[in-house]
Length: 598
Ligand code: GTP
Image (cartoon, rainbow, N blue to C red):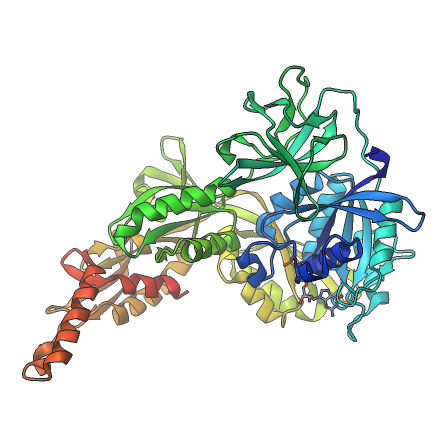
């Protein structure tokens, strides 16, 4: 196809503003799907995505659109995920495009991720086309929303398309705007081929499949290609596009987008951001790649049944083949046995992986409280990255502990500013700015420790603002604070799975809460059990599980024999899941309960 007729674009939006619904309508209008296939949200493939209504893996389709001028254009719609945990996927999808549709819910207006996504699009020099969505809603206020887009983002909204992805209104207008305004790709068809890898996944029949956007030259089926980062050569055995179903093709020219199969065993070899070139006449300079992403949230993942350890390892390896952004390594815990320490991009990412492990691989898991990675400076001047509170070096060997700091941008109606400021202060935030975006909308910027943002910050923010506040965040650096390791002890033995790093001022409340919870969960023994919260050797809270007074099984004797047998069987079942901590037996459920609280 003539590159002049190609349009590559993404849809960007704040979460729930209707990006996936709009993508579906575009598929309808271009006739890409038969009526039977028009199930809602074709692009959200995985079951979990459909249930949660979020897009995790970017998915790209080729569509042919006959415009009002009679010319048929080839559109590549590159889907992007909406959640902040997956920012890096948005960014790399945008690098494969020349334009972006900015979808704004006309009943909600500009929100934090609207702005964050627009910045990403502008950084990538994309033509941004704003669209007002959901104008079918009685609460839609297109005039106000248009003013917000002009004032806050600075985009010209003359002739802005008013659409409803629900009713199908305005979809053709959007396609006409894309054809008219998104620049055609520029590229040299005769140059040595250079194609950008912007996604890859594992297919059990084909091995690694890579999604590319060709910049220069032509890739052909059967060609010997080289991945420039690793320098390895492969034969292109299969090429295809999603139209929207996988469709084989024999070549991809400048500006085109499609997938490649080349007998690559693992996605680990297909570095996202790498350049595919010809093996015999390679390009000399690779395309500019992407920033590396690092996991920010860490947690121990343990099978509740130790017999499932190998299954868990297999499952993690398989998931990792598709998602190289999470990491894992073997870990052991006194309390939970053998498992893995895993690193994730954020909490949502962690929940998704955990859910997939349980659902798709039938595993029963315990996940420890998530932690951030600390930079620990030792008295000898060296620095260690600590991702597991249980592995913190002894206090006297440390000079200081630094924690990751996020710059958090919060959009909120002016009436809730006070409540939001109070929340940020309580979370050890440092205010950076406070601006009025319009008469009644405020943008508040804070630097907050990631550990304080991770847990229930978003929920709290929503509740203090009655659901009106939205937020976005990015890592800005590391900062030292008075951080301490809080241990929980049972009769003097630490429960490593429950250790956390907290600010000294919060250690007392946290320790007391945990001690009280544990007291209710640890079963009574023949003797008294002390439960303590400690900072190093200093105990800061204590509760006591009193000794049993009488034999609980006594009442069974002489009773109904089948009831007794049932009880014994239940005890045996329970035994398997008991963990010895010093001389005290603690059911695994206790850890589960503690880790679920919070
Ligand atoms: P993520 O994929 O999670 O980023 O969300 P999204 O931006 O793709 O939003 P999605 O398409 O899932 O739409 C969110 C909700 O808004 C869904 O319940 C849609 O049915 C609804 N919705 C989308 N477009 C319209 C519209 O034009 N009008 C109305 N009334 N509802 C819409």
